[in-house]
Length: 88
Image (cartoon, one colour):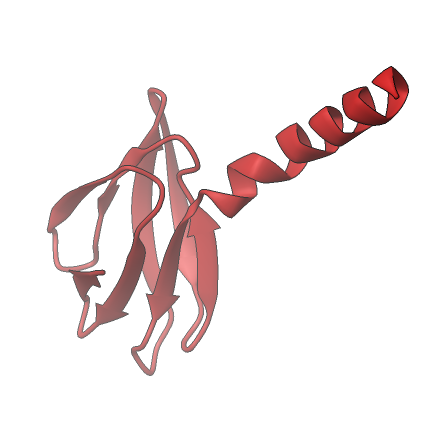
């Protein structure tokens, strides 16, 4: 019983961060690059036209192609359209 519980806990921890990540969808016709700052680390992420990426499982700041900066908790759905974002 304890072994099953431990295994379930390990599996939950392995998938939980991804399940809580923010989702960013590029609704533009061209690829868009966003800058993500999470835990003091900066990364540029290219999102192809029509693609969706999961980011920021623990919250972050993103800078959009329009120059707008948005803080995310890690559970939002973000749509990029015309270089700007709509957060749901």
